[in-house]
Image 1 (cartoon, rainbow, N blue to C red):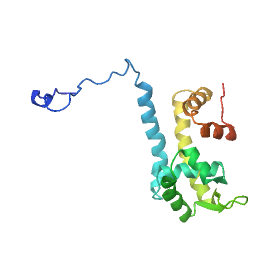
Image 2: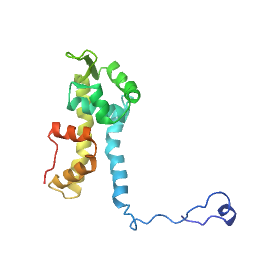
Image 3: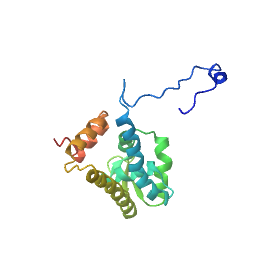
Image 4: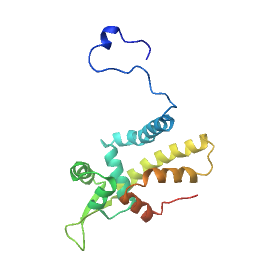
Length: 178
């Protein structure tokens, strides 16, 4: 903080803390902050594209996974994304209404709802993914990382706690590379 608080402000209410948390100390904040800012930039590339459609990150996640596993059920998507039906409903309805995704009744179980991308949905998903891959590739080049295997394994370990995620990785052939 640049200036100390006046004495009159210090006595009112709960005790305030003026000292910042050190970058390295009991906790090392470097990777936490690197994740914050890397995620912000990684998503910003796609966000600028999504804005043109009036979409947000929830639309992006749905489009991504429906395109990666056409025919997945709504229940599978809810489990994978760890979201509620209510939070999925509005976003999915918009994607269906604007013909980015189609919902089809299950052939074995008519209560099932299977999701498929349309050509329009596939095109948008590829545009979003290409923007993000450009950022990833540029970061690898700038960091002089020729082999993404260690980064792959690190991210795998960061994201593998939930069974639905582990099952997804297995189905998609995503695993350790070192």
